[in-house]
Length: 160
Image (cartoon, rainbow, N blue to C red; front, side, top):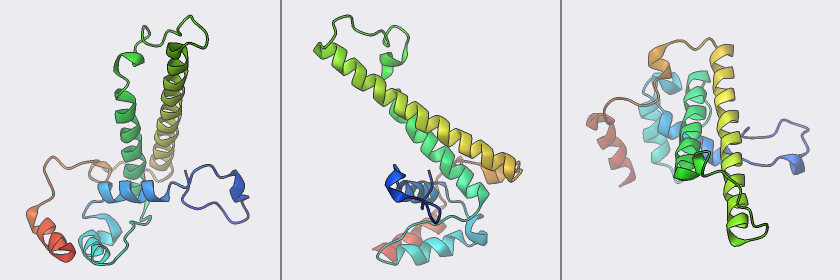
């Protein structure tokens, strides 16, 4: 899941450009300590422009970004409910029936989500190991409370 293929990469072999998804998850995962502790000003400036994407900042934000997308995969997988149980994953007997075809589509969706989730978790763990990310505050995915109103109001005024 890279934003841009490396120089010299045959782009016809690149399956997904995840830049928008990763930028959105960076936005969701951003803390006041990111962007050189200037995240609030970064957001103010970005939200006042016509187009705004949160770029890579460092390994802790990237870790939280990967975990954010992995959580989204988990939520998407949870919508399958009973299908996740061994009983729900039993292949219908009648080949080509509506149930059989639906089962294979559902099974394929589940496998793709599972592979994507595992890939993201692997990337997050690789970042954690490579950069020795142990600081609990830097690794926090979500605060226990909403964004403080003194941060939110100035940002909202910029976009209204």
